Image (cartoon, rainbow, N blue to C red; front, side, top):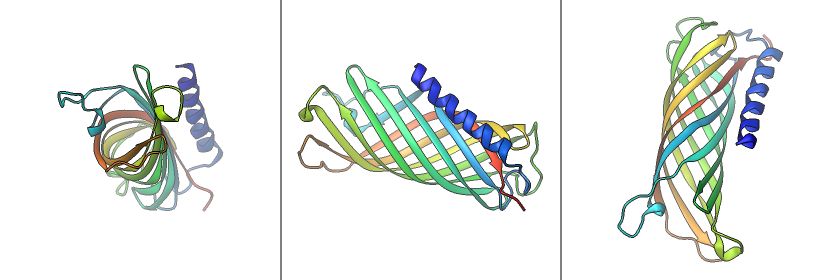
Length: 213
């Protein structure tokens, strides 16, 4: 838990530093400005996967921890497009899973194109992302107890950001993930693609800034 807290604080401090180093001269969420976001799950998530079916056909459940920093550029007022990198860690009994994902992510801040956004305001948004992922699950020591995975995810989310300052805010986001992945054990062959779904909640910090006029 201390390691996770350190990661969270490092992301938050990086965003706050960036926001203080670059003033939001073009206006928060306006065309020509930039954004950074650091999000993590709020300690719970419900996951269902074809890979987690038990002998009766029922889906098992497990909790996991995820960090998802992203950064990008506003191509028009309210619409920011950038890149997402995600790290996911899960543990169920003695089974441990780590996964990295990366890809494009877009945000649309509702109402930001019609008014100036400033400290003390709350702005709702919608987001969509597509990521390529690769991961590893270990059941014990040795290659025969290692399960590698690869695939993709499409994520849809809705949330809101509250501005603590003109260029720094905190956000909460509910998301739904649809995906597909293949797996292989040790040096074996890749399996057929399996469908996945995930529903959860993220909280985090946003920073908005520009590099000049």
